Image 1 (tube, rainbow, N blue to C red):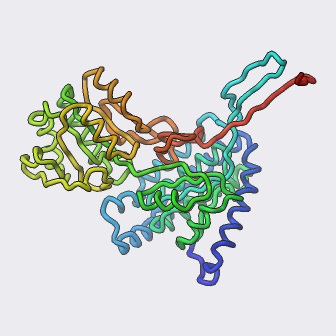
Image 2 (cartoon, rainbow, N blue to C red):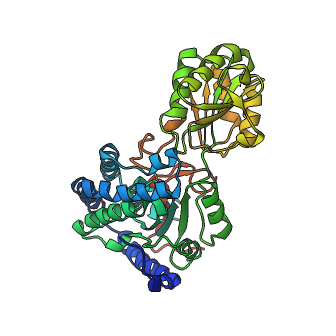
Image 3 (cartoon, one colour):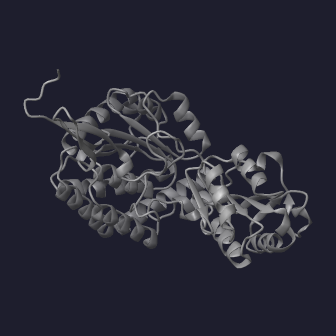
Length: 426
């Protein structure tokens, strides 16, 4: 897939209307596609990704060169990179989504009324979903698979860095759709890096039912400010780890290191470490020293700056998504101080408490309202695949329609099916 020619690029509105019309037509057909056909399409897409792995890697090499020329950080380049292991992960994700139960048509509730009516509330596709995302080409496969499974057509607008990788992955999804006799226009990639296409997508109320932004604060802010289409809010991942005074030292060390260092460029990476004052000189000091030894730049408060290697934290380090080997850290007076800090600086994504105290964990769970709350577990588990969804289209941090990992089921709405027997209302 190539950039548009300069002449074609001048008619971005026309291009996007054409894409929208084709998506709307495909959505009408996909909405009643059989579960077997959708599973067959996803299985064939997985096989296509396997067969075209070398082609995907070659395309990704072009994207990596583009990213380096653009000056992307090491963490962002890691998000962009595809290798044999990550391609195998894409294949596994496609097959996992294929094997899941089809949410479309499932009965959420049913009941009888004294009037003689039988009422069912059943899941139904949303229609056409626009997904706007940055860097990570695997989102192309995840979003395409989940939208297909849930009977939705999807318009994908990936980051300029992942342009070539995403193009081949969409071709694989189209291979799957053809193999199953489903409309190829059910999955489309915006064929230009021109940012004008994003602004058009955000206002296509006649064609698009929902926009899902997946990226940094700048992207999400743009979408929320300019969209006329409803938006699933996916804010930045400012994830916190709180080491309680009743934390197990070994668990605290293992979980914190994993939460920060496993992959620094994903939204589930821990960005802030909070340590109860009572264990600041024991468990806390051990964890901070281990982070420094692992190559993490720890930006600490006055207390933690006494530890060799810790640098002073600035005010704007709290509530910051580093997406790098950097973490902000401070000592808190107690669990309520930790909760207050998270409420002030968090993004309602994922927070984890490390404690052996059931009451403390319950207080943490009750008094915070982030989409995902964990106990004694790494924030890196904030992922649809790890939640048994096969994949995710993103982590929704808003409170309407969907929260947390958004899988196929979360990409449906519902309708009421009402049956009578010549029933009339008195």
